[in-house]
Image 1 (spheres, rainbow, N blue to C red):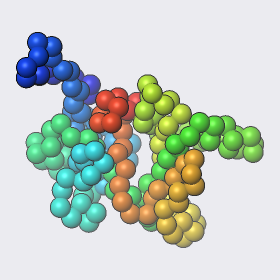
Image 2: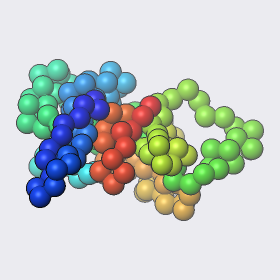
Image 3: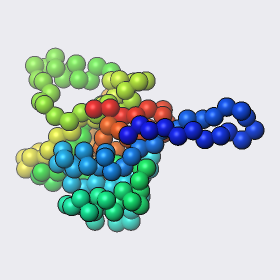
Image 4: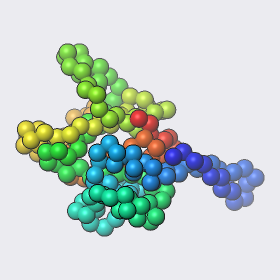
Length: 173
């Protein structure tokens, strides 16, 4: 997923190295984890029309078709806001997890992605499945300053292996 290609810089003798996401392996890993609403994204923006409605990827054929069209794009998931769908705790500031643990709680074993592993290792996305009770109580996205709670519509860049264009870092699990 972090293959590199060099391209010349016009008017200079040096070259620029750019990293590219390899869509299919990242999408297959996401599907293996149980993410079924997969969509190709570019800098967090969906690349398919009607992406919120038609992106259940139940078969390998569907993922292969997406990969053929969007081979070097990032992988996103659609957050549907119902029981069984994905909820994301998007941590933006240092100390958030530690403050939660001071209450005597601990994070369960779950999928976690470091969104800026080199420049801001505290930034992470923690993934959960919504229960019936949680989905009935969680009616909108919440921006709490140090973190966001996401799960009611919209999308999320899903996985390690995807490139952050703002920092040129590859997300890590």
